[in-house]
Image (cartoon, rainbow, N blue to C red; front, top):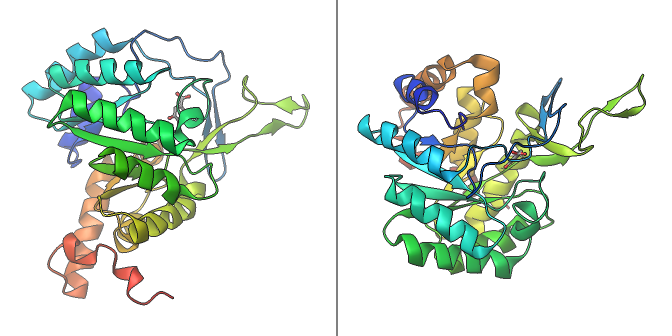
Length: 284
Ligand code: DHB
């Protein structure tokens, strides 16, 4: 996730990323929440951006640039109704996006994201209607970890016809200024990404792999190549890197790829495909 700029996305791909997911886009432009919207903690990044974005029309131009470079693009979409999701997704696919990742998990804005993403029937309906509208384009559901059993939502997405799920979005969290004696984020609570949430994400992928037949994309705290390997062994078919770019810059893609390649060579394994889900073989 590198914002909504085609040039930054291209930099990620030039650094080794296989494709890009945009910052979440809605039908209308949003300013986002007032500051402070980001807090760096010792173990991850806490944010409450409030879905700032220039609106779908502006992003159409960025997607068109990316497709000129032949870069695989998933457009992340949020909406305040089923029709919002469908409309924004359709515009993105018409602009050339290879698919959409539906944000059913943002913890920071009322009426979208997490609020719909914890209700299996709404998740199924949003996926089913979007899939019917975008036809052959890929539809992925990005799931929230802020729920007791993530597999219930994963199953609902699968039932709605999702081509895959991304696990996980940010974990609800907060930080308090001990001198001002109040929350640091203007919204109080935000979403935590980065190192702290990696084990939570690995557990979510592991649980989803047991129950789902569609592919899982691991997301959360991939900083080193070994974090990516953990995701593959838990059952992910691909991984995303977001907050890791802030820690390691775009070099992270090259470092992770190189580390994975060395690991495979050292272990005499031919490809990543043969690692997927292997941790389940020895589990109880
Ligand atoms: C925001 C959106 C997300 O999906 C998320 O996980 C965290 C923050 C936001 O824009 O507020």
